[in-house]
Image (cartoon, rainbow, N blue to C red; front, side, top):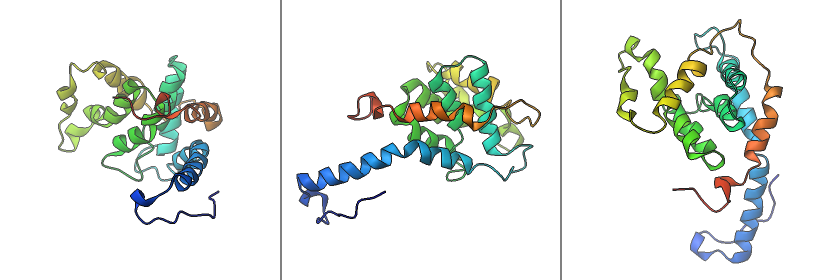
Length: 193
């Protein structure tokens, strides 16, 4: 996948235009494989049920299935599928990791939703573990408060059911590939404010 040629510099301010063109080509190859890498990371959530009736992979598929069946737009369905992708690498801030992966490819509203869904999901259980189930209230008044609360209410917190007719990854893979085929940040030049 990677080129065998390397840059000569050891400090970025010493790089030449040609060297940065080389690095740009390498990064573009990474970008082309991003959907595969994300899907592979998602599949790593399978196996250990972590005490639930289904594993995190099935939870992710089930959340996306519910979003699809409720008529959500394709970007939101992919967000539903990937909202917990950070569980293994960042168990205490998985929402931030998922949001960082998705940010260049999704709307600011969906970015906010995925970044904050963990706090909103806490409403359903934090009071049982010594936490503040109303922690999400600090965001009341934010334009995405109700939509994020609804995401958790309708799709996330209900998606631990082994009897639910969950769609397979094949139903969502084309959507994931379309999302990651978009130009990053919509125009390829940097994050929106």
